[in-house]
Length: 489
Image (cartoon, rainbow, N blue to C red; front, side, top):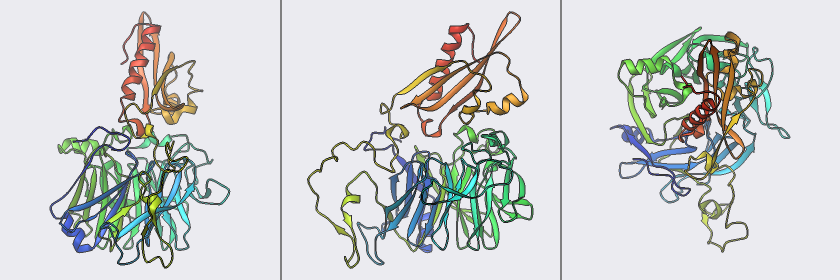
């Protein structure tokens, strides 16, 4: 059962491994790491000596793409790309862990909605810049430097035009990407979630696979391009110009890693509006299966689901997963206790040194915001952030275009096929001056009868645990009632 959250005690997360998961991890001598931006967490899962899983979690601000290279983790967050570096020497342990990841470098990119991230042999960081619809890298003096964009994208703009999300490397070079559509308008992918997904070959600029449903996590492994057809819940590979399913997984599949002859697939529940209306939803309902959150281990030869890690509590979605070879019990340092202050190492130090606590220094008594941590308003902590609801006046199809990323279904697409019929009424929700939700209704008169339709309702994912959408509808109904009594359809 999830506990009520407080700043020092986040809500409970439950994890339950299938019967033989621990033994499989033990036999393979591996641990796992995965991210969930929905609850701002990085998880590290290993094994204790007593036969139980060892789980370590750390808070980061919207962690998404995760990449393991040598003894470092590289992780994309809301406005940063972090490098977490192992500070334990071979054979050294600290409080039972044999791998201690310490945040060592942070590159400030701004909020680009970075999805997949990889690191090349020469330590160059590449990432999918989803908001700007391009493959990018870091460059001094800039937030990012674009390396490639799909040929159908005519302009680099923070509009998430096609939901470019996944990157596959082949022979050390960026070779394949996935996108939810081949659209060139702001948030255009939202209207093509069922079958608009594509795989592109970067060197040739060609779309090699069409007709996918929200594809994610392309990976080149054992001479094949594997990917997750998220909207159908299928894991499979590309053969020529078609996707070949290997197995069905009971959830929105996203996050893919390989180990020997196994695939590790991340699963998410179907809570977000971006997940609704998919064929996955219909298949789960037809088979009377509930979408799960967690990880499954797939046998590449048979397609069978061999093992699983079931996750409950506040975590409902996963984004990315990596394998940590030859690691028994990994941990990471966080920002909310003094370990990050006091665990020190240097050449010839003989391992980690724990310095003595010191008296509080000026500026440490009331930290306002720690870099890398989500703001309290993003943690869904009751009472920490006041939500302000405000009526939006003088709405037109034209001035709503700038808010299209905050509309669902997309109003930009609506106006292309359906002209405005009457007055548009809107109510916004904001936290600290930043819009986090928007609801729009249209009212029109036919003879003596007045009609009202809710045409758009959207809340940012980080705020969906709060009753913001319900309050938006209530305030919108009040605005409608004030203008003329009616009921929202």
